[in-house]
Image 1 (tube, rainbow, N blue to C red):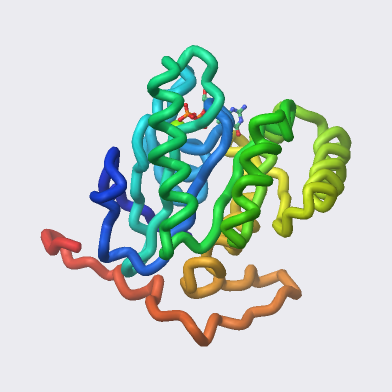
Image 2: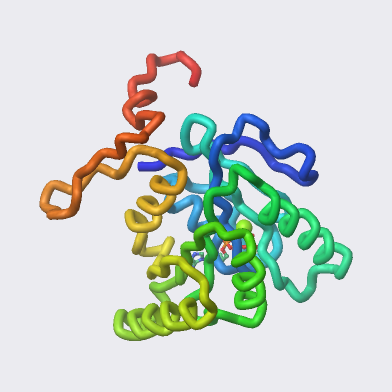
Length: 229
Ligand SMILES: Nc1nc2c(ncn2[C@@H]2O[C@H](COP(=O)(O)OP(=O)(O)OP(=O)(O)O)[C@@H](O)[C@H]2O)c(=O)[nH]1
Ligand SMILES: [Mg+2]
């Protein structure tokens, strides 16, 4: 399990945390489910701010998930009612961050499974290609479609990605049903050099604990009452 703790809210690129060694950004259209996905993957309620009002996440919100490791909740793009000045600010802050942040290991792009690959998503993906960093797509709110419609959408998304010449994974995801959580967590752990998820007992999957792991998830499980940390 990935345990996240809120770390900081950043509105100015000069204030990005220096102590970060590795981070993964969550991007996507406004209201796509970015904050919900972070909460679900990080096993936390109300960690990242979820809202029915699009455009609520306005800054870069950093969540610490391990020693010097962070998830970054980005403001959504494409909220039509956002003032133009705010949209430009978005481009400046987020664009600069995604382009220049050396610690950024990859981007998780959230797309509502009912409206994937809008022009904005496509432009954003082709723009991010220049960064030469991996992308992992969550087709979110998969609970809104039947299983077979979801699988069709997954297949189409894979085709779409390869036609855009973007190397990246795609998966189904639902915060509501907790669908695809382990798969997404596995990607984050790999990108952040965190220890791999323990294989489930009945699974035949590889059980290789990452030899490069620098932190241990067991490290902070035994907390003395009253102790901090
Ligand atoms: N049915 C369903 N609804 C979801 C799911 N994930 C998020 N939602 C809903 O979608 C809305 C937006 O979710 P957020 O997580 O705040 O979306 P966001 O992408 O962070 O939005 P901004 O910060 O405004 O860009 C909320 O009403 C959520 O409850 C899901 O898996 N299934
Ligand atoms: Mg949000």
